[in-house]
Image (cartoon, rainbow, N blue to C red; front, side, top):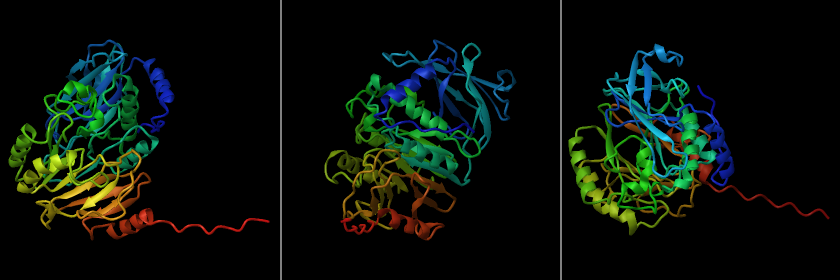
Amino acid sequence: MQNRRSFPTAPGFLAALLWLITHTLSAAPRHVYLTWQGDTSRTMTVNYQTLEPTEASTVYFDTQSRNGRPGEYRSTAIGTAHQIPGLADGRKIHWVELRGLQPGATYYFIAGDPEHGFTAERKFRTVPSGTQSLRFVVGGDMGISGEGAELLQQSAKLSPAFGVIGGDIAYANDALTNFTRWDVWLDHWATNMITPTGYTVPMVLAIGNHEVRGGTSAFMTNAQFFFQYFAQDNQRSYCTRTFGKNIAMFLLDTGHISPHGGEQAAWLDAQLSVQRKVPYKFAVYHVPLYPSVRGFDGGLSDAGRKAWLPIFDRYHLTTAFEHHDHAFKRTQLLRENQYDPHGTLYLGDGCWGMPARKVDAELRWYEVKTASLQHFWCVDVGRRRVEYRAVNKTGQVFDVYPPGVAGASEAEKVYESLTQPKPAATAKPATP
C-alpha cells in the first residue's frame, strides 16, 4: 500500500505550488484514478496525467500481479489523450477504458509508456454483477484541507467498492489559475483512497456549483475541469450507473449546467422507469431539496422539489444524497412533501472536508437530526435492506439508520457526546 500524506489547507498555496514543481521534474505519469463510463462489472476507466508531450495512452493489466514489469502483463488497452485549452503546463489527460473484464474480479495494472515511464502497479476490483452485498461511501463539499484527507483515510479503511462525490470537489471554480487545487485534491484521493488490502477505490461524481465558472452556466466549456478530468459522460452533466442487480444510481445536476426541469427531468423520469424493478434506487446531487442550513423556500432547492419530487415519489426512490450546506442531516421518510413511512430518505448535507456550518437550534419539520459535523456516509446494500452510517474524521460512527441495526445505540451515544454543549468550566479566583 502506498504511504498516505496530507496537504495544507487552501491558504497554503505556496506549499501546493512547491509540491507541483517538485513533481514536474518527473516525466512519469501522475494522478492515477479510476472512473466508469459504462458497465461497472465489466469495464473500468483508468485516468492519468502526463506533463510530457506524449501521445501514447496505454494501460497494461492482468488478473495477477506482475510487479510493474510491462512485458509480463497479458492484456493491453489503448486510450485517448486530450488537453484543457489554455492550461499553462500543457498537461495531457489520458483516458483508457478496460473492457471485457470479469465481474467481481481483481485486476492489476500500470499506465504510461516506455519512453516516459509507467505508474507503480495498482489494483482494483470490478463490481459483482449479481445480488451480492455491496458497500460504498458518499459525501460532497470536499476541498483540499488536511481534514478532508483524514476523512478520505477513514473512508478507505471501510473498504468500499467505490466512492461517490456529490459536487464541490476541489473548489477551483473552473479557473485555469486554480489548477494546483485540482493537483492537491487528486493527490489526496490517489494516496488516501486505498483500502487496507491495497485496492484503489474508483470514484463516481456529480457536479456542484464550484465546478462551474460563475456557479451556473449553459455551457459545458465553463466546467472544463469536471468534464475533461473525469471520464464519465462527456455528453451531459447527469448520468446513471448501476451496480450489480440491486443498485441504480442517478447522478444529477442541480441547475449548474442543466436546469432541473425540461430535458433533465424527462431523462430522469425515463431512467427511473427503466430501473423501476431495481430494489434500491439512489439519487446523488449537490443542492439539497431539504436543506439543513439555507432557507427552505426559493432558489435551487425549490426548483429541485418542483421538478424532481413527483418523479422520486412515482418510482419510490429509496434515498437521496444531498450536499452543499456543509452540515450533517437525516430527514424523516418523505413523500409528496410530507412524512410517509414508505417515502424517500434524504441524507446530507455535504461536509466531506469543508468546515461545518452552524445549523438551526430547532429541527425543521422534515428533519430527524442535524448537526455541525464533518462526515461522510457509509452505505451497506444487502439483499433485504440498506444500512447507513455517518462517520467522522476520527472514524467514529455517530449515526446509524435504520434504528435497531448493529451499532445504532452506540452511535447515538457518540452523537450526543459530539453535539451536546459541554458544561462551562468554573472560573478559579485570581491569585492575590
